[in-house]
Image 1 (cartoon, rainbow, N blue to C red):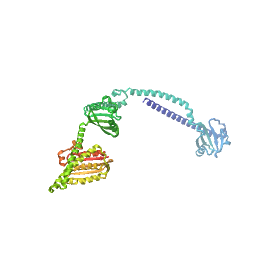
Image 2: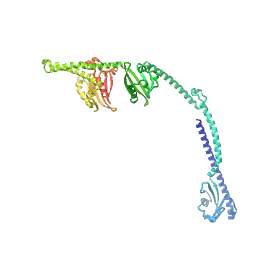
Image 3: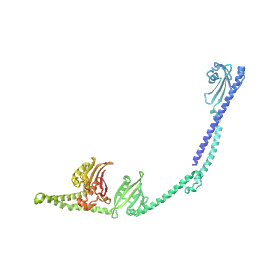
Image 4: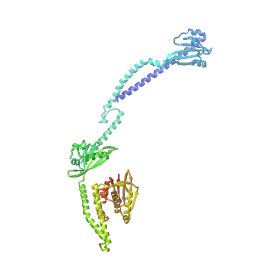
Length: 549
């Protein structure tokens, strides 16, 4: 700031000095030039009077080193010149001052020499006999005067600049000194310039605001630490470089870490490849998930990227103990495998007996009713077994042949096959959208669509409706089934896709459900890397969306 004040003061002083010198020199030069012209006119009057009385004799007696006198005839012929031989001088009728004198009685002009340093001023007057008397004076131009004054002007400028520099430095220091001595911790206690009083009040207000925000931040920090310290789930906060910012006691126990890991790379907390891959994935994709086993228990690690205004700020890791869910899922899988083997043999027996009945080995009057009943039950049990086997295949990741399947045509076929069942409940089925194809296993895609549509009809209300939509949204193929049925309570949303899970067991028994339909949908969707979305409100209806990438 001192330098800026100094430079500004010096600049102003230099500009004012130069302008003043230029103005004074210009005024003085114009003044003396005007005095010289007035003197020439007076001398011309005297010379003119003498010439009219005595003629050339008078002019020959006049001697002046400064003035040049020329006497010119009416036709422009030079009659006399005090500084040159008239015989060598040309006609002067075309001279500006001569022409003006001939026309108006008086004339004047200024002519410059070949260099801009010399000029000649002419004054002319017409005498009574018609001849013209001219006086001229040579003088230097203003540029030459300025050049001649350069040395004294330079001395004046040097003295003025030096004096201005000294005064500017002193003034700048005096101005800045109170500002440098300000106590910004106690802005209202300063005795400084009145002009900065609003600034000091503003600084004081900001101090108060910052103090209040610091207290609030400390309260929030303490609150956060209290909450995370009592969480059963493990919590780890990382910055965008993967450095640990915070870790709660549950996470310390899970990973066997201490407070020394704060500020260190998460690699120092857990070195397992799958966990490190999940950490790298969360920064690139936004979310990641991994299952780990620790101390005989199963944990699910959910990682989410934290962003602010489009910039990555870090990531948060949440560790959930899923041992019970994992065990239950394992139990259901084992049950599915076992029940498939237990039901296969009696099913073959039932089907064999039905074939004997159909071949006439039973009384004719009992054949129709008995065969129809046995085949109906056998078909239902076979469907159950096939569902269980299909789930086992999906769990094992068996490779199945894939093809290009039109979901719209698939939906129309399924709606036609379910229409008789829907008509019994007075439920309407409508397929809308456009023809969209996906590459996948036709049988599994059929299971997805059929189970969703069948459930929408089974668990609908009398006079309800089912809408099947096929289309493209955000670059993905979407298969959506919406009904106006009984709906699913919110507490069951996370479990309806589990095997053998029933929201209402009594209703499921009446409708003939096995509890495997939505589980097949889930695993078939996973096989095709598709996502499931469930929206349901009790007594209003359910919408299930399958999004194929």
